[in-house]
Length: 224
Image (cartoon, rainbow, N blue to C red; front, side, top):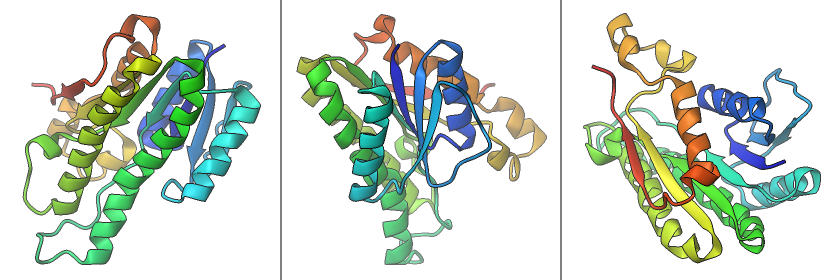
């Protein structure tokens, strides 16, 4: 049976994705800094530091030993630091956001490809953000980081197509998670994208029916 490598598996989006794939008979190797209380016969949680090369190397090696090479990698780890303008933001905050979004995606893609290329099949899905395409003030680091994730994914798509691996980036506006509910109004929340819808899109991209889709930037606007 195919295997999904899922980073950010304990997060709001990650939980929906892992359940979606498990319900369809996939093994899931879930990577995150901390575990939640989830348990399933075909699921294995593997702790890692997404921005540390040695940690990602060790975690992916453990997943490969348990389940074999990934048929799909979905990299969901990301986040935004304190909102600030360029002149207000510290170098430390900028570096934190960059590593959380860009370096984590780079390392996961890098190590997944080492396993996918010999198998000559695979799918990579990253998560961008609408604000990277329509920049907003006081989100300097996040806008720059998510724009880099989008561009990196498109570059990977060019580099891997000859190996039977596709790479695509999903760009939601706001995802309906418990964390986001803390700041959203009822009217805003009603318009947000359900994580299950993103999980279904990921599954299509990583299935045979979506294999021809490569280098796509798939925007998901808020509902009207």
